[in-house]
Image (cartoon, rainbow, N blue to C red; front, side):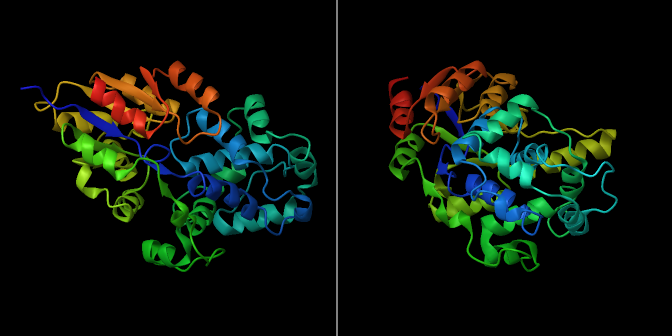
Length: 332
């Protein structure tokens, strides 16, 4: 009897359309970050397009959309005259100090001269090191991480933010962009695939946010195993306690894919990972198991560019849309 295939899915951009949730949250966080700064009124709103943001995300090396937001703010601040000395304070005090010391008129002029400011800045300086952003991204929500807190307030909305973190929102009490998310792969496709194969999920989302999406779209019955950011962070903590060394187990590290594969090692003899980012394909190729990386294009505004990036990162095949996933495994 032929063994089922193990098919692991990424969530964002693969199962769930996050272009109007996570991606727009990153953009809105960047704009809200500058509220109250000198010459704020000169800044365009929005600061940049989602297509421009997607180009930077697709460049790889950013494990989640918090890190994407830290990176975006670091890029934007290269166009702001900064204090020579780094910040002494952290958290909201650091944020208030930065707003009082800077003028964004130069940044505003730059943003109005190009249609792809982020991509242009990223190409010039892929890893800008800004001590102010470092200080404001330390800790977690409620313990000093200003940027992550702004992001989570916008993404979750006031009610869900309070429920998640046990504190009231500071700057965005309204509705959350999480409610904008839509399903990219119809349930009928998961129903058909689950009849013959084992389906799992490996996502950079926190577990609570992954489970929220699975519950909202009634997808829980289709996935035999779920690995999220929480499992990565837990194992990173274990490694640190044992060795004193800090490491990142988020993609492109294959930790999640290896862990899932180990649980099904006797049941399957083919392994697949369906993702939409170069880091997904790199994780598949670095796994101890012979995962076949399948790149999917249905959530990107620039399919040609993403396809080239996915192939370069090791994608064995490219799938255009949700129907293509079903067709691939029906014919393979």
